[in-house]
Length: 350
DNA sequence: AAATCGGGGGG
DNA sequence: CCCCCAGATTT
Image (cartoon, rainbow, N blue to C red; front, side, top):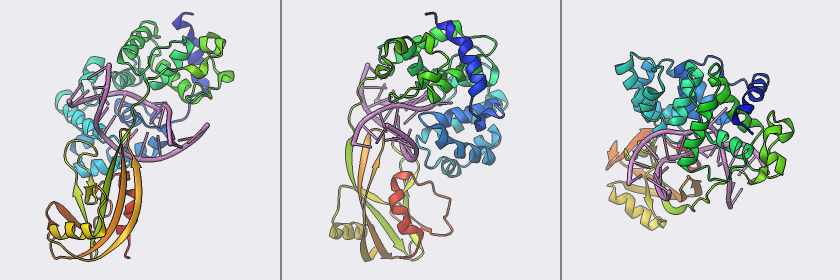
């Protein structure tokens, strides 16, 4: 079967069945860019609310370039992969300086921007500018691996690069954006993962090799992922009257630049926690168990034990701790979801 | 090529 | 519990 045979049925199906998504209403280069960054490794349903809020707060690229980091991270809080938004701001500053505040209508120049790889550059180029560039994501790789019964590991860069070349060679020059989106849309709603593909309603079922051979469940092939390591942590909810302590994480690494409740490696006993608090030049008055919580990242698990510690202190800062008012600080400090189990201990009086 | 980087929804 | 998701960057 020739790859270009999928084009017409896919485009027809897409026009009839495409979802009404916020970023499809007014697909300016900036809107497409924001949506594609948010959608990286993230489901459509999770993105919708963030997308609307983000563009309301930062309607233009200039606004993104000028946004204070805490406000920016707050807009991304809970979405994950926080380097996405930091890179987007770096790119926005470049765009203001070098391109007069407009994304360039050139694939190679878009690709040079921080946080934009071949997928996102292809999506912006094709959807916003009508350029004939493919946008190969996990959906596209899954769909094509099934249609062609290709048993190669779709996680390999070499496989993705070859698919990009093959698609670019046959893409329709008149509707590249619709074609790219039709492949992704098919993967998202018909040729879905985990073996429950809806082949009965697929517009290219007659062209699908896996469908013909009953092997849809075997594709795509993926290398086994290595297992996560486990980190044990003790989380402190340090309270001083109406204030509680947070600290800023380092500029590099996991959750870089976000805020967190003070914590240490390993599981400490109450006595060890009291000594640790004293070592911070604080005077512990009372300690209470705040229970256990688990948070799973891609490559690590945090197994946490929490303690509420009331302290007496007049200091605003102690070491690298920052005491912030429960009410005044509301909405100012981006705190990742990893600590959501413990937020309730500082949101109200005990 | 492999590791890093989040979080949530669904089987 | 495990899977995967409109991936990019660093090592």
